[in-house]
Amino acid sequence: MPKSRFFERDRTVQERWYRMKLHQKFGQSLKRFFLSRLHRKLQKEFRAKDKVIQQTIETTVREHKKVDGNLFPATKLLLNISLYFLLAEHDMQALKADAFAHPNTTKRNIALRTLLLTIYELDMGKVTGKQMNQIYSIELLTDATRMNLVEAIKSLKKTRRIIESQLSEARHNTIAHREPDAILQYEIIRKLDIRNFEAALTDFYMAAGKLLAALTLSLNEANSKRGLLMQLIKKPRGT
Image (tube, rainbow, N blue to C red):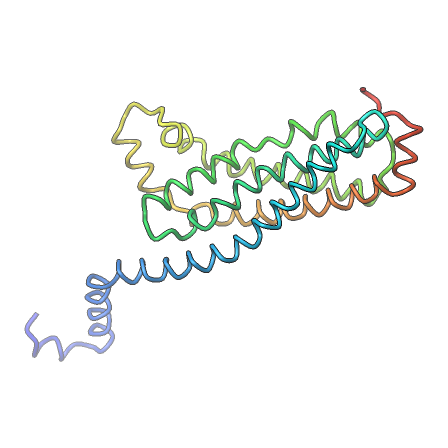
């Protein structure tokens, strides 16, 4: 476009042309710059959370080893459920910063696939089915605490199922590398973007926070004088 004609065009057209040229020249560099800043910020934020989770895991392990499951079965079961979830949460916490904002595309993609796979494989049903019925049968939790725990578990399972449905193709074809069509693998990996899972991940982490709070409240009630007494005098059904 001749310069004279270009400067005769509408100002919005000129601005759009300049933005396009700036993006072509500096777009990738700016993206890496802002991702690097965000990555450092997230690492600092998540490192503090990871330290808290690690300390909570160590405390839970110590308490679990100390508790006599024959005398206090509900406390033992609740500690096992808490530890099961905390171990997965610890892995997810370690992957978040890289999955969200690592400036290297390949490392960001691998971290995202690993994070999503961890959530995909997190089956709370393994520790909240029969075990929860045993806890409820002792009647040591108040109705409000029990309902809060039930709803928190349901919410986490629901959000996990959403991620599972969104990730099934990517898990089979790229995470486990089972797809023999290498071009298909390549295309799926390239298109994998955390923004596609943003809503589901936000809901999942909100549900995870509610579950941790509900488990903490349930453990407090189980370890109260009333809770300990109920466990001593009333054995759970199904044991």
